[in-house]
Image (cartoon, rainbow, N blue to C red):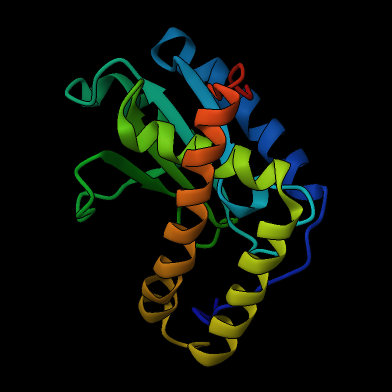
Length: 181
């Protein structure tokens, strides 16, 4: 599988894939998972994206690694020890399987809430979706074979959107809806 960056138009299949996997995750994790949410661009209807399903699993604490690591590994996900983001524990699909990123975060943490706010804001604001989509297409063309530069270069637009999402959350009293799965 090539590691080139490919942005595809939105498809409802992404939501369907999440729901099927979310059910398996819920069954395997039970009450360990306080929330299981579809996050990232594939979770925003109408938004073009890399065809990668991002899932956020919210747990009471990250220190009980085995409590969620064992069930996730039993489903074929691989714990990424090399993850440099200490606000989460990170799992990926086994080689050769469909690309899936699992972000396990502490419930109520800033990182957990930020992912949900970003998703919910984009779901409610198509103008910001179009802006974000435009930047993603431009950067994918510019950095087709450099995933790190692509990701780093999105930071400015993401923070621009998050600034607006913060104002929106204050105006609306936003809080995340029920868990997706």
